[in-house]
Image 1 (cartoon, rainbow, N blue to C red):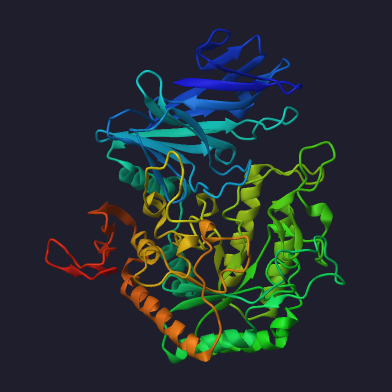
Image 2 (tube, helix red, strand yellow):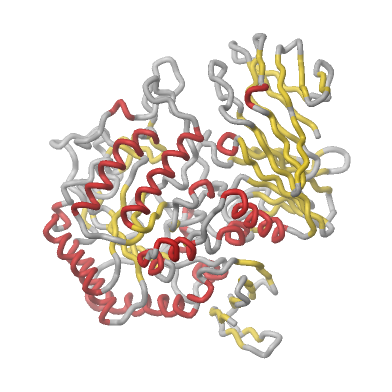
Length: 620
């Protein structure tokens, strides 16, 4: 084992060294460098599953001008060698394999949960691994998981080695206190490849985190809403959005633009009635832009209901239609962005940056429909805005189904340096989980945009796991359903933004099914001219004429028919994934069912003589 320590001083200078180098003394688990004035303890603790590496928070002592900025732990386990036939395993999106062959020498910093800069290829799990020759090793970050990245190295040294190891951000700035929890990594070795690593992590989550499955939640709570959701596709309706690109950055009631109306409440009622007329199967519906100012228009203010869509009177009629037709309808909400237009917004609740002036932090959303978006401190979002808004909505409207909060289960965790409400990254996760738990208690099912695994078990349903099906990353050789093998049965999910509005027979639709996903459809998905197909914003479904609606609903009926065929695997674990060829995959479930997906334009014949039609699937 090797440990690399990056230090900094008050002048912003940095020094990086390994504890095996001159100046360091490592004895009886104590790492000491007298010239730097730094001491900490590193323990290696054997256990039944391998061993744990732990650096206790209280052991870090800094008596000189230097302080620890980062600690990288190189275990020597999650490594590979050029040509060994193995791969490194990364938690990026659904899961990425970096083959230990053919790469140029390089070093990459892979973001996990901590936000330093916006990254569209986010990671969903605090793990990293490697395998070769039937042997595999997995690292699970237990302590410090909100404050670490992965160091990926390819083809380095004379033997062209490969490795993945954790980098812990002990602090970001010199005047900060160190990370507030012990650094802890569980290392486990086993026979197998990435599949066995996924199965191990699934069992580890159940054993150590006591994660309940969706089926267990339904049974324990007698949760009929979540039971319906487990069989239902998601149908989203975009209603009102102010003109984009936005030209009024700090809006007031006098200057805010009138929203463009994509759909009215009456239009939504028409869709629900057509669903029932054509006997469409289970569908969970969500209204986006129903609130004052429309989508991203005035959060955290929600009421009054947007008048240009029909106002509260027409919304109540649509809710009644939803009850009559049997399709649950819920709302889109937001506790990440805040806009100065909102009548309930206190600018002092915005995250502050680290600088001397504690400048308010702007959201990654930038300039959207409501103007300049500010990042609300997660503590204030949970304890002030969400509590008030969600209880009011619950009391005012009879809604059920997966209530949606934008982005809080997908965004990178961000420190707040406000003097009145400072918050570290772990605190972000804590308060976002509180919001999701409240939604579950009030509406029986909680939905957000992503599914980073810290959001479970409070999160029930995810809008997407990744942006696009395949990613142009220099270290990505193969994309695999690692996340799905861990969490299918624990969360309901659509796999890709790129798969939104994908239809039967299309590759994105088939890939979603092969990875255990539930389709997601969106009337007027594309609404911002700057968001393009490269980011997953491509296919659209538009509300236009009666004739078009009838045809679209007939296509939607085909999707719900497909889901009815697959309902027996909704609670099962995804136990294996096999690529028989470039055009035929097999997904194996823990209840013995097997899903074969044929991407080719010709039929596929299985070993038992079964036939999979072109661009279709069968469940055996």
